[in-house]
Image (cartoon, rainbow, N blue to C red; front, side):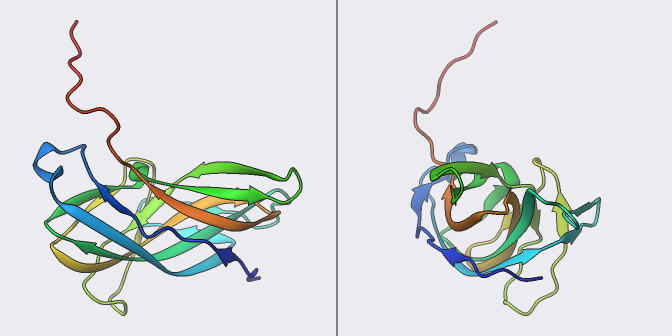
Amino acid sequence: MLTKLLICFLLVHNYFSIFPQNIENGITFEVLSAEVVERIEGANSNLTWEDNENYKAVILKVKANCEANLELYATDFLISYYNEKQKTWDRSTCQGISNIVSTEDDDQFFIVGEYAHFTAKKGTRYFKIFFGIENNANKINLLYAKSVIEDIVVKR
């Protein structure tokens, strides 16, 4: 059963910093659609929210404009969502990412897991990401990793 979601998406103009060669390369995102599903069939694993009284899965279809090739990990994304019952904003980490394609109509498959990743080549690309959120959530914001402090030296 599909539930209507009011999507409050953020057009993000951040810089990716996990890979130093990409620090200067910008990327922007646009959420094209949001869909509530009860099951995710991934290439490596399946997840289900069927008969789940507390949670549901949300798939976001995303358009990315990359200024250079960029590695995108599931852990780079999270959503904040409004919990209607508690009247608060909560967070959920991305649970999987699809392969990244050149057109919206290309075939896509999910890799489930927080370390799933794909390379987005320079230009306009499309991919999907999914999250588990509470059933009473109806507004979400897409968030993307941004460096806060760079080049921290860690010694043993």
